[in-house]
Length: 264
Image (cartoon, rainbow, N blue to C red; front, side):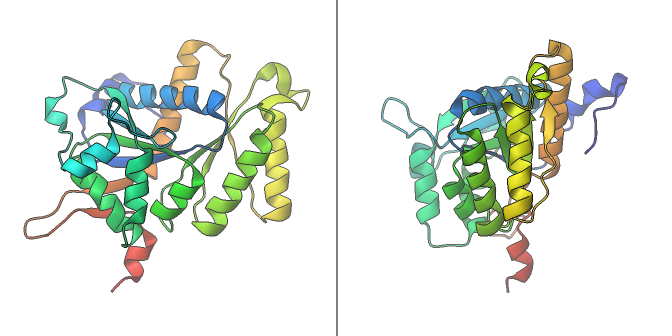
């Protein structure tokens, strides 16, 4: 992972726009009380790095009063970053839209091309979705979905089941984040205890070594924000790039899918 340089050039990083939309993923495994604040903090960190951010929230379905991804797919009009005054982030309900994408009888990379066609922006798309969606949309890709662990009672079970399915069904290795609390860590309770138990379960039953990132949400705000920016940078290193078509090409391409190298 590349840490942000602590010099005058750090303020220029946001000026170098990516060549295409970057797709990140955050796993929704039933721990919304910790996942959603983390999602907002991550989006804010990406915005501070100079990216326009669109969160596709698959835990919420689109409605007439609250339209989202499905309406964008239906009417095929995109979001153009040229209309933005600066780095922002916003949230769109996406449950029905992702169901539509998963129902397409094509390869996963082709499904994601629809997102590239819809969000013709140089920003970041953050997909907040359950494992069912990630298994169908992102198998055999280089993306590393963010899987958070908290002190919630069910966090160990739900995070383990999510990890198991990501590894075995989609061949995806997540970035595991332990939102620890120093006061509880030494007691082996709280998020630190859950992360340790998750590591033991993964080693015993999945033959997989968990190397969790630790961020203390109770530390000083400036330090916490700096760590969130480093996390955002790390996730961007393994993002999927939804490339615009080259002259003469018929559609978007998605870089970072291992299956593409095995296709005809």
